[in-house]
Image 1 (spheres, rainbow, N blue to C red):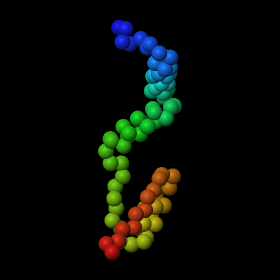
Image 2 (image 1 turned 90 degrees about the vertical axis):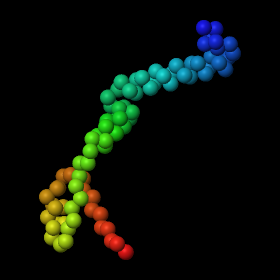
Image 3 (image 1 turned 45 degrees about the vertical axis):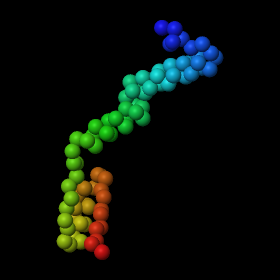
Image 4 (image 1 turned 180 degrees about the vertical axis):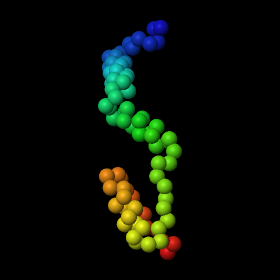
Amino acid sequence: MSRLVPKTRAGWLTAALLVVLLLVAVYQIGNPHSYVSEAVARLREANSGPSASLTDLSRVDQLKDAFNRDAGHPRVILLLSPT
């Protein structure tokens, strides 16, 4: 047990800093509006499987109709070329 008790001023400062960091980490994990909770929620959501599909379009009208149909949702248009 004597090895856990700091003997120097620097040791006490290090121990105090570790306690403060531990308290902040516990608070962040417990707070549903914190950055850590948001990051964990997004990682869980990202690992739940694909949520979008890839559509092969041959005409501009198909792109226009699909784009307008999904108004209000995030949309990504990828133009891929073999050259």
